[in-house]
Image (tube, rainbow, N blue to C red):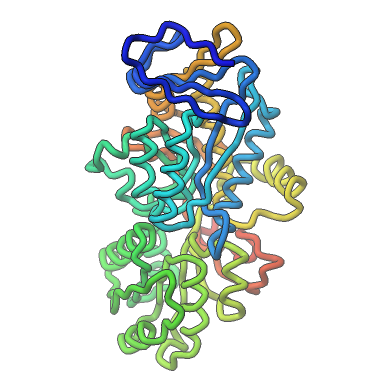
Length: 418
């Protein structure tokens, strides 16, 4: 089924069954018309090109990854399911929105030589252990929703050389959230809660640092575990510090408990609540119920998305899935997939009915993305993998009705008003 060409001595061929085909990935070798120091993937005549996702698709945070997966699927539909004459095959792993899930998902994908590139992960806690595993196998990953600052820090290790993202860095989200609280709500004091994850801890810290820089006072910085259900001890300690606002950029399950139980703490009844994009889901409305009414969420600003988002993407989404988007990163995942296809177009070489893709060449083409017109904005990557044109908005929950949850209207955008 697979014809090998010009293999050098001592090359180890890893051959894996992939949908009934044998797909060959040769590390550090000349293969067909491609010579690549990391490896070459050969997609033979009639074989599909395999794109992988690693996203959280089950559990309390499952809407986050499911929504992103749908963005990828729509991008594939736009390609008519084909790339340079080969079917596009999408495979994936549920990465669980935790470190263990990310490690397991990445390990499974890294063992599959058919995987050309990965889109994911959903949560930064998955990316920290998972991205180095994928890169060790020569697989570049493009995240639609990881926002933790350390993932693209200039001081990051080379283990993350194959990691990039098309979503904002939380250095920006933390600053915008703090600016809203200080300049619009005009609050002088705030407290924070994180859940120990790279995302939540990083964002809570960025908010606190920027809030203090703008003259505010942080009265408490507390932590819970994602699996905690009794938040009252932490909330009681926070209440004793009398903050005007409580900022908790955590995920749905714990966020629901914090929101509900804060209403039962006497000292917090006058405290305004604020979360972030990890709570942007109708599943959070189910978890928090009426307690979420009136609270704020910082999240990507959908109003600055390109005209194709409203005119083309959303109608396709609703027609295909029978509902409105269920989380906040479907458009970013769509852009991630299209950035991948644009880079593949630059490096994939056709020869004798086969397609040859250099792994390092693909990584370099992805990182060289400049001026790419996505629906989330114009994407230009820096050397460390930050690619987004970042715009953050603040939304206010109006009804907390899961059936009508639609970021922009309910929750309603309240900042910036332009």
